[in-house]
Image (cartoon, rainbow, N blue to C red):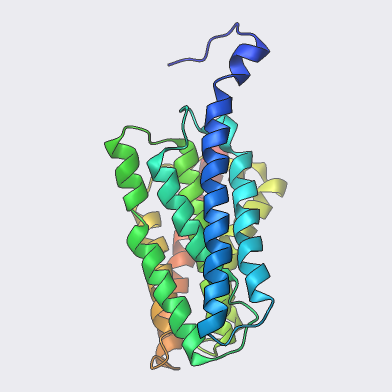
Amino acid sequence: MDRPTQVSTTAWRLPDAPLRASAVSTQLVGLIAVVSLAAAARIGLPLSDLYALKAPAAFALSMVVALGFLHEHHPFARFGPANQVTTVRALVVALIVGLVGELRAPVLAVAASAASVVVTMLDGVDGWLARRHQIDSAYGARFDMEIDSLLILALSILAWRFDKAGVWVIASGAMRYVFVAAGLWWTWLQAPLPRSRRRQAVCVAQVAALTIALVPFIVPPLSMAITASALAALVYSFSVDILWLWRRAA
């Protein structure tokens, strides 16, 4: 449905109030959960005092960014169950992000791998809920994608830190952010891309490869071969998209 062309500022902002309240309440609950889980993790795992700050900070920052897209891309009055599941995924990813810079202990690699499995299992649940309740939106798709991107970046850094592959493995997580940054210079890169099963499959492959590589008994050269294959698929996928955008712009 088209947006009305004549509407007062007050009338346009009123429907946004319950949406923001629903989103912020969900995110506050998520932040409390991250703080509690990070504190509990420090009891059973060899983690520094900074971990209890890094994980909540990562979650809070990602939620601030998510709120920035809420008004423009979320057409419904409530945050919705799908986005609430994505928020749960975000808090688990924040716990993984907090592991960056921690002690290179095998138990932390196992913890990162296990947490990644949880995030992966929840992936798709949010999309299913959105379709079931007919509340799928551009916001939900973007929210989900950003959490996946942050997960891949964190896992790629951990794969390097645990000597599963060379520093080149970080390209798996950094490539999308480089692509977004390049779009600020070459604006034709900002054009919307069509939906692609290939892109979704490559994303799943990145997460799976990095998760498997972090398992303690998966060591080089096997871990290097797994992550290098996934990175090659990612480079191919980005090349296809960039070529499509360039031809469209031309």
